[in-house]
Image (tube, rainbow, N blue to C red; front, side, top):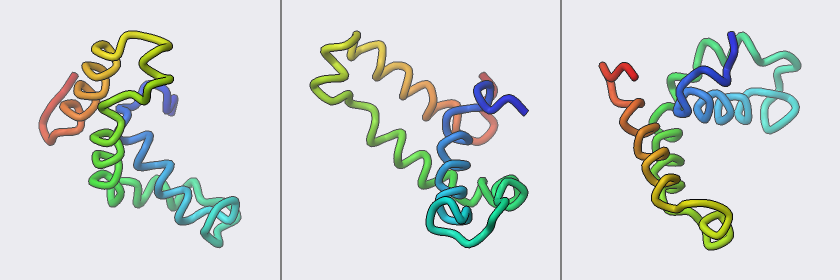
Length: 87
């Protein structure tokens, strides 16, 4: 699975799950990929909260690009995370 092609909310949820489960972070599993596959959806709401937080770019981020484009991109990721939405 190429995670770069998965929706942002899934990628964020997988990172949150991995952080919780992996021995490389706060967890105790030496190889957590299977466990992450099984539970990442439990972290969707937290991932959506992260996306809501990222809607407004920091001052430095805004200086590096177009803040309006950034906001539209993050809002699209939030929209994509809604049940039944296919993008």
